[in-house]
Image (cartoon, rainbow, N blue to C red; front, side, top):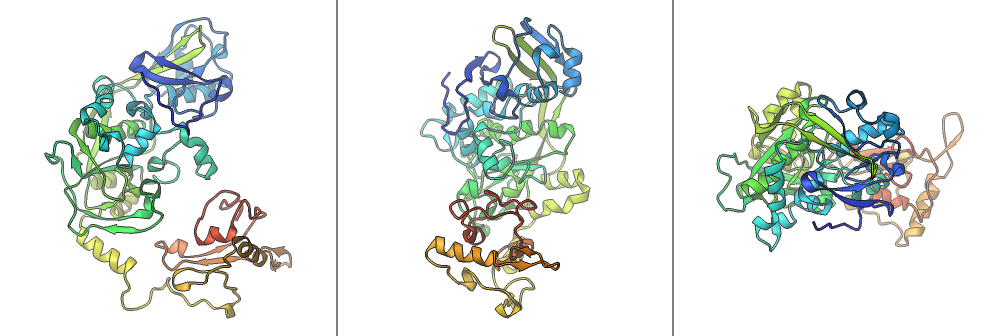
Length: 481
């Protein structure tokens, strides 16, 4: 077994590496102090106290994995022997230890990241495809249809996401359930296959366009757009959609595996639409006419936990009979049937007809047409009480070339002692008008500071409004402004 660690991976020097016999899973064990921190590492093994001297299976049950079912099935040890905080620690075992973590299928975070963005060894390695796909093929043959697969989370992203104000989790940008997956739908789009045989019985679709700003951490482009006017290669898109609290939610990790890696290693489907991820939540994917739909049918999940008295480790596995199959309808219809209250939301991504979509997009969003927009290119005058500070594009007004001086001047205007109606002093309001912003909600904004502004060496305030908006440091909506 070759273990490859990325420099970003979070590893406490007290941690140890072991190989777990079932599925040859790599487990990074943690001390008790870090075990209760949700996803301190992407692969979780709980270390119990030394009070339990029993070695072997301690709990096996079906139905939901939670404290009540774990405790009801517990033998050989007591909860007090095993845990200091049973609710939290059992929840972590259920989420991170019992299921196969998505990272275990491919090997490590960077492989998953590159694959989901349309690159990596499975896509462009000089080695033969059979060599690069062998690991995932072995998983598919031995465990792909008999175990619960977790949703992608990675230790390498916990600190990054927290620092960027994205939340205390390890979700990758393509599959961030907290910030960019509101429709509970993931999709993959493939434009080639390793056999050069086409997509067989799987449907193909016309690709309409892609807003590059929807997937900047995939294409490394801050903003821009692409259109594909009937010139693109044959493309197969397929998705999985789920409803919170249902079996489709429990098995969403399996659903993602089915439409992504399982398609690649079994059918040879690979390569992404230029400028777009290979797979992501549908909000980050290109606009296409249609997509196939896949679903997961499964029996009850059996959870089995074992304890090793010598090491204090609690390990877990799941077993379940899983069937991967086509939905009765395509992805758009399936989503609408499952979500009648927001059925129209999917029409923004699966449009049915690219010609009409491109006509509307180019005329309403990108190119000028006779008349004047109700929200763009407004006349804003200093006579209305505003002081112009800086601008770009058609409102070009460059700030002082000395960034520190430009920021100091801007801060002095913000702190000029504006008054509330009751006469108390407050920071002056900042108005940012963006003619080119696609969303009306972001086009004309008014910003009122609630907390003190960090010093210039921590936050370039003017640049925050011109180029690089971020939630950190000290720039959270409802807290700092």
